[in-house]
Amino acid sequence: MIDAALHYNPRKLLLVADLAGTLLFGIEGATAAVNGNLDFLGLMVLAFATALAGGIFRDLLIGAVPPASLRDWRYPATAFVGGALVFFLDHFLRKIPVPVMIDLDALALALFAVAGTEKALDYKLNPFIAALLGTVTAVGGGTVRDIFLAQIPRVLNVDIYATAALAGAAVVVACRKLKFPPVWSAVLGGSVCFLLRVVAVWQHWSLPKVASP
Image 1 (cartoon, rainbow, N blue to C red):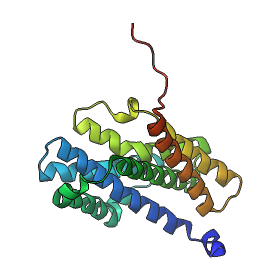
Image 2 (cartoon, one colour; image 1 turned 135 degrees about the horizontal axis):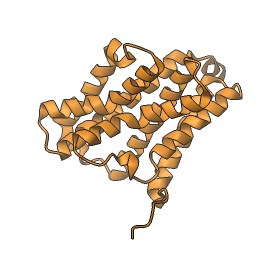
Image 3 (cartoon, helix red, strand yellow; image 1 turned 180 degrees about the horizontal axis):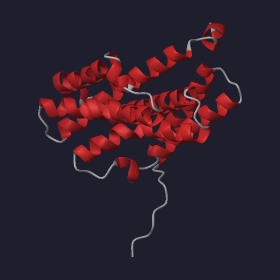
């Protein structure tokens, strides 16, 4: 079983991580739309934007055009499924404990950070740039969501969020440099991102700010 994992197709791994993150962020974007009192169309727009904007930015920057999420119907379909789940099952989803929702958000962040970094590395980009693009993939959709809702993007003021994505992306890059199998690189990078985000919320960690006068 371990041997099979070591030789697992990296492209399949990238697709699975991308689609899983797309579903989770689609649900998150749709939930934000419900909280913002948007209608069905607004809900679906936010589900799509939150789930796919980061990946679209990444693909445009690395020259992978048209972006994967616009070429492969599975990406928008998955985002819309997430939106539909929230629209029809919002009453049940609201019963999910807050810690579970935080964990799911951290999982989506980790999946996108890993997938974005892996794709950038596959395009032979500089490791530093690959880590940055992994971070853009993870936080880009949420930034667009917050702009649509006329809010300051959470990536600019929330406790350790983009930093967790960057840390996970950096671990992926380091593991690939050390010739780790792609699966283990993804698992280690994703774990670092996930754990850092969850612990940051639990311990109320945040980056330093300039003291107000």
